[in-house]
Structures are given as structure tokens and as C-alpha cells.
Image (cartoon, rainbow, N blue to C red; front, side):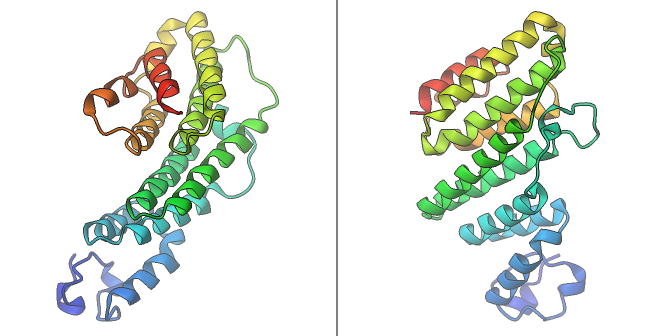
Length: 239
């Protein structure tokens, strides 16, 4: 619901229990959002962030996303975040990395270049740490190879906006594991083109690519469901 009566021209959605005049101005709302965002459900965060973006508070929207993502990611990783495709929560890690990358992109839009670079680097560090915790995988398991392909591709996307040369190596590794998975079971790879995690990883590339690429025609190969096409284009543009 809107609260234009209680907040003048600051027309944003507020949860019902807070829509009682408590937020007398924009600063009060921003303080509430940043204080409580870590405990908000994802749907509520999306609503708050959208409203902040709509009224031009890009930096604060980015902070909300960053706080939420880091709260979910925590500090300890096991490698299961990237390999445990059988678990119901598989993909949550990838979604949180996407949220952190989205925050970085919003920081850029709000002209906080250094803060954006730090957010992208932090996302990269989270993925790298999860990768480090993988001690082994089933070499003949097409899905585990595929999950590794997605993981290394995700790491590459985190490097993309900072033009970090490590991204080239990550993209090379991604292509290697995607190819191994395809050699083991091409039908499996085809079916995973529609998997939510695959779409999340491609969505990450679309987000960060827009920090460098304006032409829609250049974005097309980056959105390709063919891993070789999009990785080759990402590798070309990362520098």
C-alpha cells in the first residue's frame, strides 16, 4: 500500500504495521529499511528496493541489496553451495551472488565507483571461497561437472565488471567443465539449459555486461543458452 498521506511526496510502500505515521520523513524510512533489511523476506526487500530506485535513492537501494545478500551468504562455505544439486536449497547461493552483483551495478549508477568495485570483488571472493572448499567431485557425473561449469562461470561474471584478468581463467575452467559434462551426457546439458540455476548465472552476466555494453546486439550472444557462445563473448569483453 502507499503512504503518500503520512509522508508527503515520498510515495513508497510500507508494511501495514508501519503505516501509522511513524515514518515522518524519508530519512526515517531509510533508517528503518537499512536497519531491518537483513530480517526481511525476499519479496519485501524487492518491494522496498524497487520503491527506492523509483524515487532515485539508488545508493540506498544498493545498500539494502548488499546487506541482504551478505546476511544470507554468511562467512562459512563447504562447497555444497555449488555442487549439491539434489538439495532443495540448491541455487540460493547463486541467487545471493546475483543480488550482490545487482547491488554493485546500482552503486555504479549512483556514481559510487569504488563502492561498486568493492561489491563486485566481494562477490568474487565469496564464489572463490566456496570453490576452494570443494575437495573432490565425481568425474563421470555429468551433473557435477555441469555444476562446476556454472560455478566457474559465475566466478568469471564476478570478475567481469572490474575487468579482473582472473575472469579469463575462470571462463576457461567453466568451458572445460561444461564440455566434460556435454561429453558424458549431452541430453543432460540440454535439459539444464532451462534449470533455474543456469538462468540465474546467465542473468548475472546480463547484469554485469550492461556496465560495459550498451548495444543490444552485443548483448545477444552473452544471453545465449549455448555455453560456448556466451563464454567466448564474455571472455572477449572482460578486458
